[in-house]
Image (cartoon, rainbow, N blue to C red):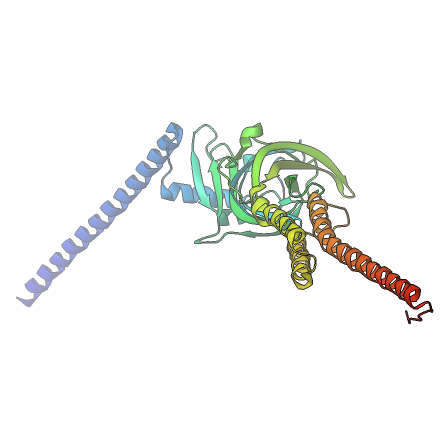
Length: 383
């Protein structure tokens, strides 16, 4: 009886083991079938030019990174690489005459062809990757030649983007704020027009390695039309490029030039109008009695000191340059008018009292002569 029960248990265990093995085999075959199906679907999707799935795209990026050398530019040993640029102006932050610079926020987009990154040459596929992917591929060593200080925005993540196409085309974009040098000509300040530039250049690659150009000509610059600056109006913006010869070779430099016309309204109300009123106020002393010395002197000195204060305030917003500016000529003329009004009172006062003293001395002398005639003897006086 016990032997029969043992055989029964053994048969049941054998059936359970068979069922388990069948289940495992079925699951494995289903996975293999699903993988084969996914591969087939991915291949058909790639052929159709649609998006890749996650696993397939991860495998492709891993394969690209394994055989990629970031130290060599695309097409190394061949003709120069064509590098296209686009700029979008986000905002003008500040323009400083004292420091001769201006600050603005830019979106810079760079385009080039890297055949080593081609993963679907015949498919119209494009994937967007985070900026960290730029550390795994070759990117241009672009810099701003007239830059003073710049920083890349990192809220909430670093504002960098890499967009990779199936044929190996790369779009590399970033957002940053930069302070650029702008050498200003202030001869006609504040009725002046300034030309400020953005200068883009490759730091290490000469024209034999990289050929930089604007992607779509004048249309490569966007966002300028909506920009408003408190003291300036952007009347025009132009692009051009030159070849700069340095000690290390010849480099291509791209220029974006802004033509900035200064708005005169601020200076009319803060400088010109107050100066006009101060000059007219100095003329009030002409209608005050010349014997009212305290009133005329106080008014004259007050207007002179006010003009000095206005001149100091205007110069505090300008660099210490040696040449004469238009506003300097205006302020000097106003100061001359005010100072001349004060001198006029001094001259009138001197003339009046001098003439009065002479008249008094003459009258006194006449009285002495009359007295001498009447008394018939000389009269001595101490003059």
